[in-house]
Image (cartoon, rainbow, N blue to C red):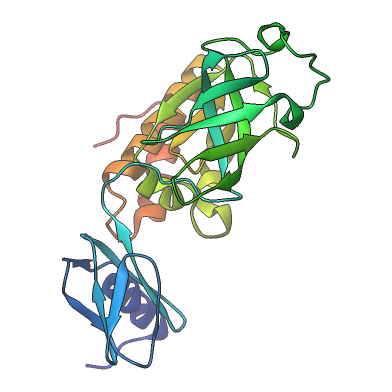
Length: 237
C-alpha cells in the first residue's frame, strides 16, 4: 500500500508506541539501546513493561508505571518532611528521600536557624545535585529554584511527564495558552499550577486526560480539541 509522507510518519509514530513485555525482541545491531532495554549478542530486548520508543537510531522502553528514580540534573518539586540544625529532609515523590544542606539554598542560613527559612510541609523547587550508589540523594536550590507559595500541586505518574510536556514543550505550551495558567512540570511527577480557579481546573483536567491516554497516538490534536471546546463552555464527549 502506498502511503503519504504524513501517513508514513503516523505509521512510524504508531509503531514507536508499541507496548512491549520484558524479554521481547525490540531491535538489532542497527540500533543503540537505552533505558528499559538490554542487549544480548546483536539483539536488543525489553527489560520492563512499557512503550517501545525509537528516536533516530536509539531504542528505549518508557515504563508504563513506576516510582520516580532520581537522576542528577532533574528538576523536582519537593516537600520538606524534616528539619535539622544544618539540613532539611525532602520528600521527592520517590522511594528515596533527599537532603538539602544549608550550603545549597539561596539564603545565608546560620546553623540552627533552618526552620526560619523552610519548615515541615513547605514546598520547594529544587534540582538533583548528586545520587550515589546507595541512592543517597542530595538536592540544591542554588540554580534559580525557590520556595513555592500559593498555587496547587497535582501528581501524575513520573513516566507520563514527557507526554505532559510534549515534544519541544508543545503539549505544555498548548495548555498554558488555553488556560493562561503558570505551570511547572517536574521530573518527579509533581506539577505546580497557578491561575484562576476555573482555568486551573481546566488545566488539571487536560493533564489528567494526557496521563490517562498517554500511550495513544494523536493525543496533541485531541487535547487541543478538548481545550477549544471547554474554553467555549461546551461539553466534551
